[in-house]
Length: 449
View 1 (tube, rainbow, N blue to C red):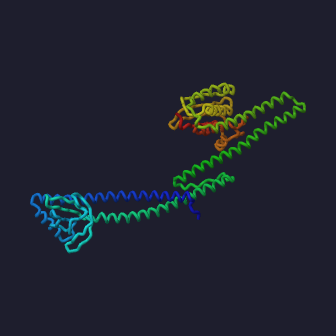
View 2 (cartoon, helix red, strand yellow):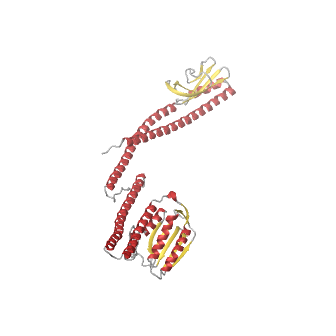
View 3 (cartoon, rainbow, N blue to C red):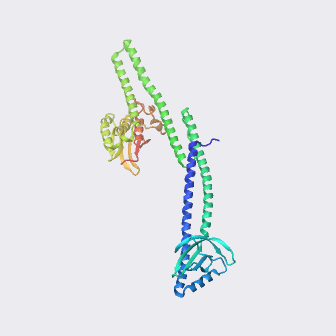
């Protein structure tokens, strides 16, 4: 069993401390509000009782007040109210207090502890909240209410606070320990997967629990990164093999022709053939550089671009080529603005049109359309050529791929892949479909202006 790291334990302790502080604040606020409510109710009751005795004094005199106090004290129970009426010298006249409390030296509302006599002759210690008033110049009156509930509430608050903090601390520590253990388990899995991936197991992925929490989101992000790296490595391997083959073949032919020319062959034919081979090499290198530039394009380079103008220029450029090949090239273009790089979008459009013209037999039709639909902007280039079998369409978008069964013309095999990368850089999706007959290349820009 692996224990949490120092950082994880420190995080758990911080979580526990915050939970303890929050619990203490919540209970304290509740206690203060409850005490205020009890005090307000007790003071209101005392004020009402005092007002009644003052009214009696004003209407019937001091002896009526003394009689009322005696009747209240004589009830067969420990009264809720405490009374004491004294003369000017402080001698008790009526009430259930033995003497005037020493801590009360002026009128107003006060709290104090005192001994209260019961009807059974017992004397008990009670907490009293009382109001004192002067009845004329000869008498003083104290009316109070037992406020032991406040002391009991305070004791229970301290007990509840202690137990709550203890329970919160234990739960917080357990939760922090569990959470740190879960984090360590994810780190262990990520570290193991990273080591295996670095060791050559490119299909390694992190487990996703399906809970949709932050660990699942991080695992999905890492898995996407692993998948992208695997795709790039596979693409690099394929590109390296294909590039080596595409470079080796013309170089071998050039070497052979040089040897034949050295042996006295026709140098003019040799030079012409070598020039063709060198042109093919240069085209391959140029296409490779274009692909590299396309893949390193940053979103910070994007500006609003008139895609309709780019399509119009490309169609105008390829019209003579299509006419020479006996093809009909038509276009239907609507106004469209996208954010991107003009040169890269131009490469996307020209590669698709060039690919369609190259593989469409004489008498065929190449159509280019650009327009908006409910789900975004669509660029569609279709032809009436031999098309591509559905099983081979995904493969045809890979680097240095030429499907000789249907695409027997010369080339680097990068045209469609450059278009694919250009579409992906601009947040679009390139897909190949059946045009019945022919091939249909569809580019969907979901975020076009």
